[in-house]
Length: 324
Image 1: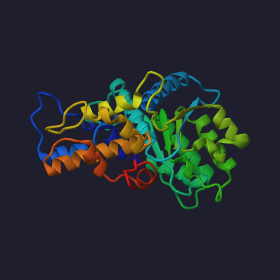
Image 2: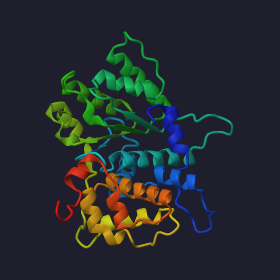
Image 3: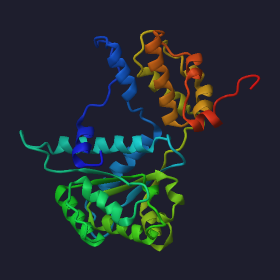
Image 4: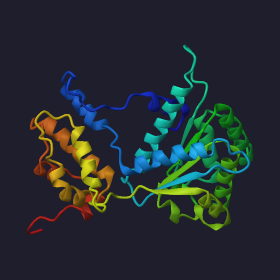
């Protein structure tokens, strides 16, 4: 997805769909593949991000004299859902653009409404702008300076009609190999020259030097913050985590699973996953795959308890049994 061709394939390929009452039964292999890919569960973070992106794109549509408002999406640790939220919103923006601007029959897409840039580990400002170039296939010669690459990127992105720029894993920018001021200056330059809304996503983004100092403060001052943190067991009268579990259960394709089983285990599931949406969906999907393989076709608490999750969850969040 870090090239235009890859992103276009992702955005225009129908995502997995839950079984419908009138659908013919799926084969075992089809159901295994379905639970492996699975549906995207609409969490509060996805809803909030979608609303903010839509609003800021409208807000900045006719803004020309200064940089458009942007977004920072942060999560305290992996598996809290930031990348899923980012990709979901990016796909929605891409498809909305195609509906409003369908390409002529038989022609390739003339525009690229969304850019998805994944920051490589230990990236410098020049490495980052090179990734921008690679996304749209802009040739980069070894001797080109950062300024030359940036000029080529700004020209091509503007011509391609990029409206939304998603920068994922931005915490990977390495302050030991480039100054934070250089990186902040690059991003500030891009936001001022490109007619697009920028979304920066990473782990503990607000704690990084990138968004502090004189230049970093300018970036942070233009950005709205969205946190993709673990879901609480309860939020006032709302039981958001239970609602998410219900949505996951409703999307399962198991022959003998009884609806309402998983929501009854909400306290256990919250303790087991610490409220992390990635750990939750992985736990239930693995249990579903096992249920298909062993023929039980249902998920019980014992089945959930038999699944081994990531090391963090197993070390810190697995409920202790008696005598342990």
